[in-house]
Picture 1 (spheres, helix red, strand yellow):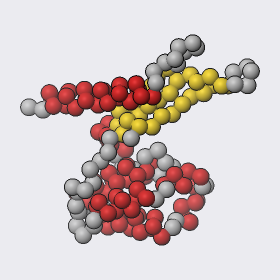
Picture 2 (spheres, rainbow, N blue to C red; picture 1 turned 30 degrees about the vertical axis):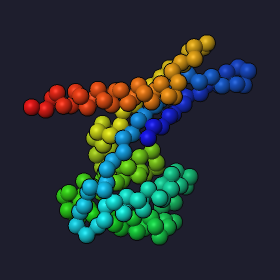
Picture 3 (cartoon, rainbow, N blue to C red; picture 1 turned 180 degrees about the horizontal axis):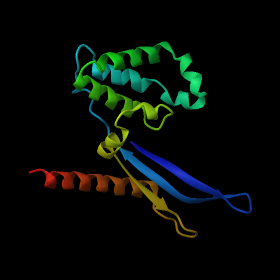
Picture 4 (cartoon, rainbow, N blue to C red; picture 1 turned 45 degrees about the horizontal axis):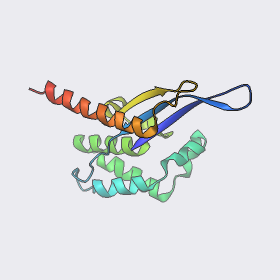
Amino acid sequence: MINFSICLQQNKDLGYNCLYYDACLRKQIPFTDLAAGNVDVGGLQKRMAAIDWKFFDKTEKNGLADITDNVEKAVGELQALSQTEQGKKTADLLKYACWSDTALEYLIPGLGSFKSQYEISQRFYLFEGDPGITAEEAYRFLCNKWMEKKVQAKKKKP
């Protein structure tokens, strides 16, 4: 999955100029191989992915009191999963996968570690008259950076 964030600046004639955009490539996490206790991790991941977690961005901070049954069930399963050390790591990874880029992101333990493991990003500047790098080119660039990161990691292993 790739996310783009665009920085626009209003100019004098009430139009907008795009100054730059950030592209972030997030690799998919294979949850089907994970199991912890009596919790079906793959099923929990599918249920969590089906919930619109960005809904909480549109509410005030106290909006969490109006949690739906699906959210309560998912959070309850996350808590049950967190009872063991391996389960806690899996629960934190599920939170990262579903809560990144939402108002709930602050609840993800080890967020920086997950980002360095599963994300790669780059800022692309745009100058007047220069078409810049297209979204497709940015995607290919980030995929190449990802492969380079994997090769470097393999070189470091003894």
